[in-house]
Structure formats: structure tokens, C-alpha cells
Image (cartoon, rainbow, N blue to C red):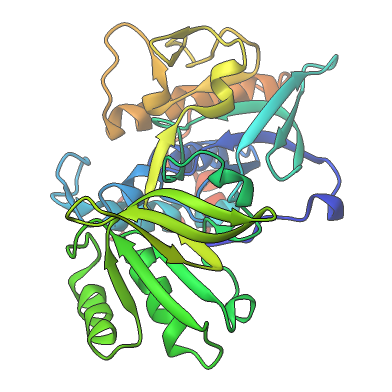
Amino acid sequence: MTVPPESAAAQATIETDALIIGAGPVGIFQAFQLGLLEISCHVVDALPYAGGQCVELYADKPIYDIPGVPLYTGRELIANLLTQLAPFKPQWHFGQLVNTFESQSDGRLLVETSHGTRFLTKTLFIAAGVGAFQPRMPNIEGLATHIGKQLHLSPPPLEALMGRDVLVLGDTDSALQAAIAMVTQAQKPKSVTLMHRRNVFVAEPETAAEFRALVDAGHIHFVAGQPTGKQEVDGRLTAMLYLDPEGHEKTLPTDDVVVLMGLSPKLGPIAHWNLAMERRQLKVDTESFATDVPAIFAVGDINTYPGKKKLILCGFHETVLAAFGAAAIVFPQKKLLLQYTTTSTRLHSLLGVDSFSPNQKS
């Protein structure tokens, strides 16, 4: 699921019962648990899609410890969690980091993202796992100043690259697919070069085979090397410096650089929110997984408490108690009753399923 970030200028502050930071498996299941309690929510994630670690780190690796399911891949787990969540229709805000929060006089929290999206929320859930996934960058001083100009952290529109020399950095599926797309469309760059330290890729075998066929045909240039520096003229990027496999420094002229070297998790702005932490994890009360700041909860790998185990199913358990903790804030006058999805006609209505008697087969 990919949703473009909103234009900050085009939207006002969004008021909501709950805001979830992180669209990994625990964040998705948190939205589901909130839905069962009739708490509406919005979800923000730095990635352009839902999935978190499950998609980024082990999309096709097996997971054997999800109750009742002998085997899931990360991708399958996310797909089924999203299907389960669908009846509650959360609002997604992808490709954004949550930067700041400010407690308001009425107890709500004013939250703002890197795209200027503002939320006024009654409760805030931090389900950021090991941190927000952010693009890996070559360690080259001053290179980041070209981001959004000649340096791209995602494939730019092909029409913007027409007639230009383009360098793609990376060995991932997205890197190879970007290079392939550039030379197989009608609107083409002047040249496309992909650089990686060796001619071995982490991309899917089918993608790597298609890429190599285009290299053999002369449509894509492959360079084995490690970026080490850059050249500029009047503030414009003109070339990248790199070391070849023999250790010789070489120069590759380029107009645009597309960096697709994978992602790495970083705790980001949350580390500076003055929440109680221990070893870069948020300390919580296990009654409701609340942090030391009212109305802010933390679930999944981002939190810590005595006996904490970093397992997905433990994170799922935490979301249930956190949802009930939030319900006491969202509905302070409402008596909370524990209902069961097997028998509750109200929950069946929320989930969009027909109620059935114990003698009926589902």
C-alpha cells in the first residue's frame, strides 16, 4: 500500500482520537485493537508503505511463532494484518517522520511531521520498532546538500531525467528496478549507470537477470566501485569519485544521482522528546504500556520493562492493554466492557461480519 504524502499547505490540523507512529506489524495491530474499542486513528510511517521491519528486513523470510499459523513470511503477515484491519479504515500518512509533539491545555497532543502535517490527538501510540527506516547514504561530506536537486532518495519522474547522465547507487531490488525502468520507457535519460562495490546483488534473481541482460545489451552501464567523493562546479554536482576494485580512484561524470542503497533504522526525533528512556527504549508501565507522559503509549520493540522480550507476539499483547488504556482517555465517561469477537454482535457489526450461533460453521 503506497500513499503519497499530503501537501502541508493543502491541509489543516487533523483532529483524531489516536495517532500511531509506525506501520509495522505491532502498529497495524494497534490500529485493529483501537478499532474494536471504536477509537478512530491515523497512522504515520517514514516508509512509503506499511510493513516496517517485516517488509524491509525479512519480507520473504519465514516466521514460525505467530499463534495458529505454522509459517508466515514477513510479507504474508503484513498482508493479512492489513486485511484484518480493513473494516476500521484507518487514515495512512506514509513517507513522513513525526518530528515534534506539544501537550495542550485540554490534555490533547499537537503533533507535527516532517511534511508539516499536523495532528491534534487525544492519544499517541509509539510503535516505531527499532526506529524509523531512513535511506542509507554514502558517507561523503556535503553530498546531502544536493537532496531534492540532483540527489534523489527515490526514483524521480522519468521526464525529469530526459537527456541527462544518471548514476544509480545500490544493489537492492529498488535500485535495479529503477535502472531497468529508466531504459525501458519511452522517455529516457542520456545514459544510466548503476554502481555497486561488486557484481553481486541482493535483488530478487528475476530482477538481477533482467538487469544483467540490459547491461549485456549495452543499455545500462555497470561500474564496480565504492563512492568516495564528489565534484562540483558553481554549486552543481558534476561527477562522483569512486574507488574501483583495485583501489584506484576514478571519476564518473553525472547529472543526477539516485541513491537506493537500502534503509537503516534510526530512533530519530523521538530520542529528544524527553520521555523516560533506558538504553534508547521507552520505559512503560505494563498495566497500559503508558510512558511517563500522559496520553502517550509505547508498544513493540521501542519499549522496555522488566522481563521485556522483543517478539512480535509480545508486541501484539501490549497493544490490547494499551488500547484499553487509551479508551479510558478517549471515552472517560464510558464503562469499558470486555467483549469477545466470537460472540459480540457489536464487534461483528464493526468487523462487517454476520453473527452466528455456536452451532453454525464459520
